[in-house]
Length: 143
Image 1 (cartoon, rainbow, N blue to C red):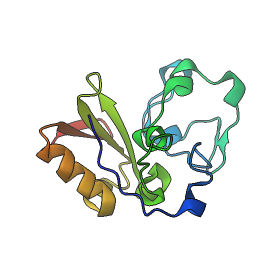
Image 2 (cartoon, rainbow, N blue to C red; image 1 turned 90 degrees about the horizontal axis):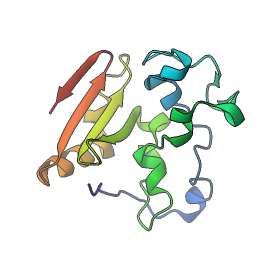
Image 3 (tube, one colour; image 1 turned 120 degrees about the vertical axis):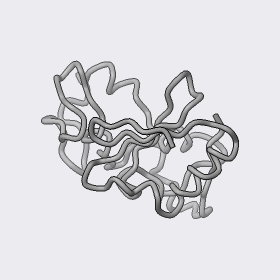
């Protein structure tokens, strides 16, 4: 799936964008089975806004997971900083071997996907015929 890119072109802003750089949104939003951590709760090992307290020994699911924002930072068309999960309040991922876009939302911000660049990505992704799903709390909804 090709995700639309909204880069404001600011080279200075991109200097630290090849890492999570303090974004810990997935540490709350995602379920981590190895730690018995449910979705939508902060991981006990997370220092919010800083990172993982067990980074070197973190579970495999944490080691391999990269949100779409982070994945694009290595490419020619990285997503803008405003779309980083801690800024947009949306963790973007894929499912079904990359065929579907999943927006992981915190129950305290269920409409975060309706704003700004995320709304544009949703519209463009749907216009290209891809499925967009929203995961908020226990609810999974297809748009």
